[in-house]
Length: 450
Image 1 (cartoon, rainbow, N blue to C red):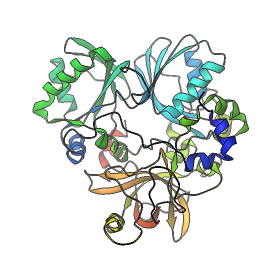
Image 2: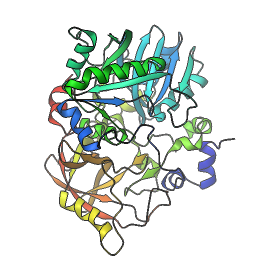
Image 3: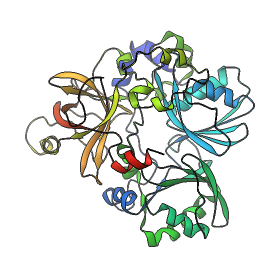
Image 4: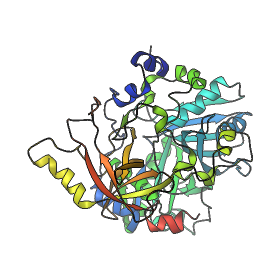
């Protein structure tokens, strides 16, 4: 029998011991690492068009029944006032104290039928409440290809880049019908009806195409054939994993589930392996120091108090100006070069910086310093070939470093944890310049405005 999260915390004495020294093996992304090379694959979503296969690494939760909307709206900070069939949204969930659980993409497929897609943190949360909250719903879970036996239920392909509309036009034999941001439509592709969500993963124009898994190969072949003249490029796991750095999305903040007595039943329901692992230089014995609110990650625009949802009273009570602000940190190239170069010199090296994505735990939380004082947390980090920059996404305390200011990111752990991904190393301070998030100008000024 799999140990529950609560049992694991009780056995080890604290959630920090569980997360910091997680025995989980490094995750193998269930898509080819590269089809050509990750640098060219990154360039494709900026200069032509990228084809990203999203069929395998995310978890799907299908929620159906008369109680589906009540369940989902009661767990989401988002408004459901204008959410008809053929719409999608970023679904953001918090606990009863207004602290972030996570986010995912929610699609309204049919009347009383929804599909929630994303990392397992928010999927687990919704499934638990569906099963234990007395809602008139049925849920069906389709795990990612790491844990699932057999094929996915759905194929899911992302067309991303300036040539995406032209490729779709060629496929459907006419002008692309106007589909608003996060609206859904249907395209005739290879004799099949393929559903589409209008959005993108790297802050560029894009369509997410999905349908029954049995149709996936036929649709992919049609996409590759139609896209050949436009430079359509298949993107592997390495390139795909960096797309969020351009759009400014933090994929895995620490979910606020590990400490509150009110969530004990949830921790007893949740298997311990679902807890994940924690890495980075931000080091506190109190897990609640890692918790965030939606405002800390710039999700305030999605918080709607037009409905009753878990955590609404707590969010209403937050003092004005108390939240952090999300930024991009552009790491100093000389300091990055020095850290990487330490592997080639005698002595204890810096923590290995893997390219293009350097995150080595599910939850990466590094200390951000200004004039020696901690001012926030740095999360996902990696290299953007389109900007020739190594960056991280961060959340900084109010009233601290403004755009253009110099800060530093403390890279590496002290003491070194026992995670399998962690080798003996020394901490180093990497200078960084504060920049906007999203970092890419197009995403910030055009795409994000949608």
